Image 1 (cartoon, one colour):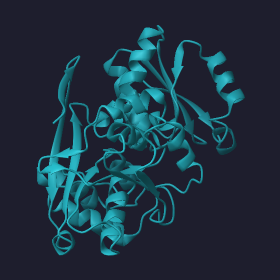
Image 2 (tube, helix red, strand yellow):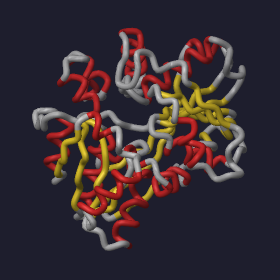
Image 3 (cartoon, one colour):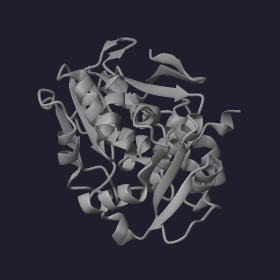
Amino acid sequence: MLSSTNSTLTISGRWQKIRHPLLLQHQQELWVFHLDTTLPQLSGNKWLKLKYHIILAQKMQKSGIATFGGAFSNHLAAVAAMCKHHNMQSLAFLRADNLDLDNPTLALCKQQGMDFTLLDRQQYRQRAEVEFIQHIQQQYPSMLLVPEGGSSIEGVRGVTELDLLNTPAGPANVIISPSASGGTVAGIINATKDVTRVLAIAVVKDDSLKQRITSLLHHNHNHNWQLITGYCGAGYARFDEPLLQFCRQMAKQQLYLEPIYSGKALAALFSLIAAGQIPRRARLSFFHTGGLQGLAGLHYRGLITAADYALLSGLEAY
């Protein structure tokens, strides 16, 4: 169990064993790992992916962090919360045509002191191009520029400190994680050092994702893993009623999921199990990457009901 305190921020890890008829049928154990902090926006993979960026910004005497994200981005919410916690500035290059501060994610970011620069979709596509990055760095020399999702060498370094191999019942045979920008899975692969199989379940349709993960790996730790790409449905941030129903079922045993990242990836894992693509009698370790703040945005857009928002976020339990 990971547990520590960082400048009044308490971080703790916990395991949750999941029970389901499909797991009994295949004689499998499923353990879900949660990383919780006293700032909910930093739970899951968020604190891990930002801790070394903050350290680097402080070392370079930067005033804060600038980064990229969409209007409902978990990453932006995390950067805003992390920077406020460390008394630093935060700036978002936001993929949006207008600044909607009724949006709960952006309202939260603004409350944490984040500033915004709007980019249209064409501009946003340039976020990884060298000339575009150099232009931003020249405009904001006092800010540390962090890639979308925090997926950089510093972000991977934080995730590498996570032990997903050793469950309460013993070593896992397979480790599973959602993947969108690649940094979390790269950190997990680096940490396991090919000791066990790692499955990265893509929640985006992005042909460059595998290459991005590979680019962040230690060269001798890149064999015993696989990127699963067939379970993205209609695409990133899109979900159907069966996926939403799966998240409702998991909530009934106090596993709270959103249907964008962890919910979509865990549903994909159950589909793989049903298809016989996961070994029988395997012990499975699944990383819950957090992001429950995104449920408020789904409710705001009318994509889930108020009852679903309460159930999936765990509010119904209180």
